Image (cartoon, rainbow, N blue to C red; front, side, top):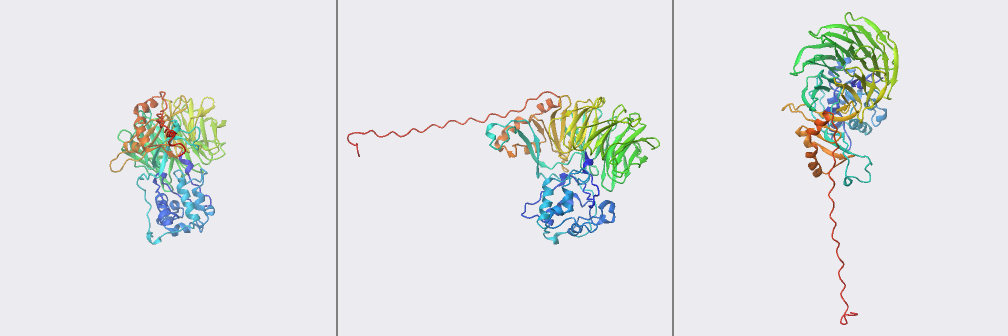
Length: 585
C-alpha cells in the first residue's frame, strides 16, 4: 500500500518527492558522477516540483528546502547540510534515501528510489560531491508544476519468473539446481501500483499508479484504456456500486488532495471534482446507495461529501495523525476511519459526531476493512497484528498475526467468508473470516505489496506494489495464474505497451513489447537466435485464455538441443612394408 512510502519529520527536512520510479533517467556512465551531469537531473525530476526556491515562500510545500540549485542542496535547511563531502554514512540525504522504515521511506507518495539511483548518490557523496560545470546551471527562480506523464527510460530489466526448465546446454557449474527461465523486458523501472479495485460485475480491474489509472479487461488480460489526468499518484480507486462511475483519489504532498470522478464507459471526467483537503488522499469510499463519498487524507481529516454536487458535508477532525482508511457501514449510517494515531473511529454520517473509538493497536494503522455484514472491524499496520473489534461494543475480541512486516491492505470477499491481506513481505495471505484462522500465503514472491482486491465472484485475487507488476491468483488453489505489466499510452499515437505472462511461460503483448521480450537463465540471456525461434511458440492467446478460465496449463517445454554428430576418427597412416631392398635403409 502507498502508506508505506510516507515521510515523517525525523529531525531531518521533509523531502517531498512525489514522482514515481518510472521517471528515472539513466545516469551517464562516468568514472566519477557529478552534480550537473548525474545528480541534478534526478533531483529535477523527483524533488524540485516541491523543493525549489519559489516554494520556499510556502514552507508547508517545500519544508524550507530548495533542491533546484547546488547551493540549495549544499545549504540544506535550518543550518543542517544534507551531505558531508566524502562521507555518505554521515550524510542525512543518503540516510533518508536508503531508509526502509515505512514511516521514513521516500519519495513521499511513492516507493523508494531504485537501488541503482541510491547507489549513485552514495558514490557521488563518497567521491567528494564533485559539481561539474556549474556555469551550465540555471539559477533563475523555478516554479512548482505538475510534471507530465513520464517517458519510459528502459534502463532496468523487468523480470517475470516462469516455470520453464532449462535444457542441459544452457546450464553451467554456477547454475542453481532449481533455476528456471525468466521472461525479461528492458522497460523499467515501472511505476508502482498504489491501488486496485474490481468493477461490481468483475469485468474490469482498475489499477492505480503514478498520474494514471489503467483499466484492464479481466476476460482478455488486455488494457482497455488509461486515464491520465490524475494529480499525483492514484492512491485509492473505487467504483460506484452501480459500476458506472470510478472515483480516483490522489493529490500533491503538502499541497492538496482531490477526488476525480470518471464515467466508466467513456472514461470522461464528470462533475464534481471533490477538493478541500490540504494534503494528498489515501482512501476513497462510496456509500452503498452511491450518494455519498468518504475520503481519508494525510492532513489528519476524514471527510464526507455529497457525490451529486461535491459539497463537503462533514469534516471529521478527531484523529491526531494521518487518516489512512475510510469505509461506510452497510446501512450507510456510520463511517469508520483508521489512522496512524493507532485508533479506528466510528462516526455518525448525518451529524458527524464521534460514536466510538476502537483502541489496542500498538503502532500506525495502515489497513482496515469492515465485514460485508457490518459485524466485524479488522485492522492492522506496522505492528503486523490483525485485530478484530465488535463495532457495537468496541470489544477487541481477537488478535492474530501471520508475518513480521507491516500489513498494507485488507480486502473481503463479497460473501464475507474470507479476506486477504497484502503485506510488506511481498505476500498475499488468505484468512478465514468466519473463524479468524490464517490459512496460507499465495504462491510466488514479489516486492513490497501496497494493494490487494478480490473479484466479486470470489475466484480471483489481484495484488500490486513497488515493482509495478500486477499479479492474479486463483483463489481455489492459491496458484499464480498471470503477471501483467503496462506503460502509459504514447502521447502521439495513444498506443499502449503491455504484456501478460503465465507462470508456464506463455504470453501475449503489444507488438513493441513482444519484440523486446527476452528469456534469461539467472542473469544470462539465451542466444538471440534461440529467442527468435522460441518467441512464436510462447506467444499464445489460447493458453492465456486457459489461465483466465482457471483451466490447467502445462508448462512450456524447451525443445531438446540438437545432438552433435560424432566426428569420424582419422585412421593412422599405414606403415610401409619391409622388403629386402629397403630393410635397414
